[in-house]
Image 1 (cartoon, each protein chain N blue to C red):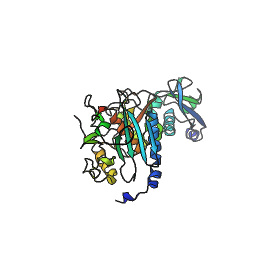
Image 2 (image 1 turned 120 degrees about the vertical axis):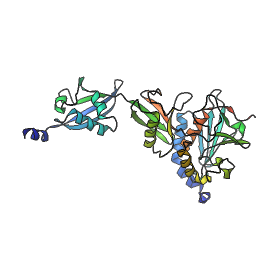
Image 3 (image 1 turned 180 degrees about the horizontal axis):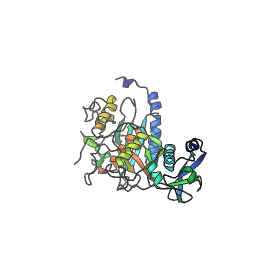
Image 4 (image 1 turned 60 degrees about the vertical axis):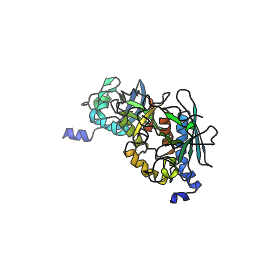
Length: 175
Length: 175
């Protein structure tokens, strides 16, 4: 009973999670957590607040003051190392432009994601409802990426800028 | 057929958000593009990879979006249009990933896509199988389901034309 009572009546605290990319904080989110919640449960709460990443990714690299936080630890235990926690993300951050919208959007994709799947994700975010979305680079001259490659195989690097393009063919085959 | 009754003012209002997207696209690509809201005409100058030869892309938008716009290549003073000498020639080696939308047809060139009024048979184009240019949205849905090109806004149309323009060298005809 004491244990249950203690759990229900546990203290709550605000924990700041900073998302780090190449030694820079690129996103942060603050979540109120119960001190007897596990780090695993906390990770799920961070994911809900961030809107991207997965709990397992956060758990794979989560620290407080340099101390690695394990999934079975409690928030109370982890907070002894501070209430500012850090996750170094391993995703590709890509800025996507769409020819129909003056403003870009930012995406965090797994490196193993196919170009075509990422393009569909971006196209949906920009309100495209049909077509065969793909990406064009900003290199000179620009190139249309192969939808069947992974982002990594297409040499997309973190911070890259891409533009949506329909990859459907024309009706004329010159060959 | 009600499309014929669309006043220019209505087109001007409806197209304005699309034009903002299209002009932002041109800025990003460092492409000279100008919109004339009075004549409902867009003029864009594309530079071909390699020798940077200029091509003059003209879009006319009367009765848009109820009627597909009219896209073609013009001469440098925006006087004549649709001549082979003004059209970029698709390359065959290296082969583009998809068939080009630039087509020699009749005595001239045509941008062969459902979003171009001039591709429809009723407007002297090659396609009698897409209905009329007032059915361009339905035609686009049908062709994109067959993995052919789709572009539903002015910016998307420019991007697709640019995509295939990058895979051209020289001109379809001689002066």
